[in-house]
Length: 284
Image 1 (cartoon, one colour):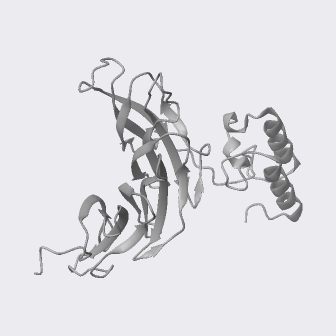
Image 2 (cartoon, rainbow, N blue to C red):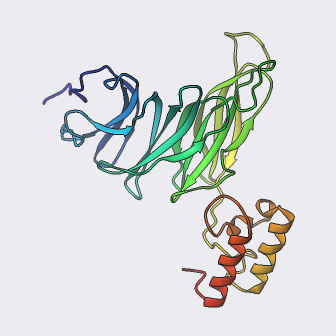
Image 3 (spheres, one colour):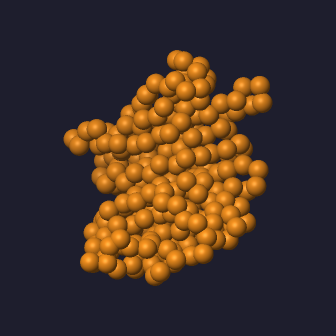
């Protein structure tokens, strides 16, 4: 009883953008222009038919310019939703996200990409271990060679996993757009990023479908550079060596060197590892 439901009674216009199923209901994101520009709002519909976010919904992102094109995904282990969206500074758009501790606690802004030119149309996916985010990106575009590529980032336990600003999935000539993510192997934690690609046609309305695989690699034992189950001077030496060589991500267990969770490898990671080895508390 009570269906259909009104998700927002705000005075402006509201348009549905994304939704995800949770343990207790459906979390919906929508754009709302009550303020004069578009803002991202959410509504949490419980299976009982009641609205946890009140009659208006919860503001996720608002500012003097538009926030829109939101995408949502749900982490059932921590009962969290992440909402990623375009945010405009008046001249270009970037990709930001916010985590929501359900039912309605909104975290601070997570910057996914603020490179020059536009970043658009984010898509976020919960892999079971992390949030995977992909989007359209024009950072490589010039006036003489306009370009729209696909980029990717992973967000895990409050930190980005890859290079700040994301990793390129494709930077081929012609535009690539509308990326999505899906899982294609349960046994090897493999995922595929799919997008529409105009490289073969050069025609505005004729695209092909391209894809790129991504394998999730966990790094549970931070600091255990040698993956031998212990934390000692050999791990410090290995980390110092790859920091100097700038090749930590290329090592078999190199991700264990990102001690500070900032997606970079530097002297701060070495100091953190050395300190916990001396204190014998690296595992904690």
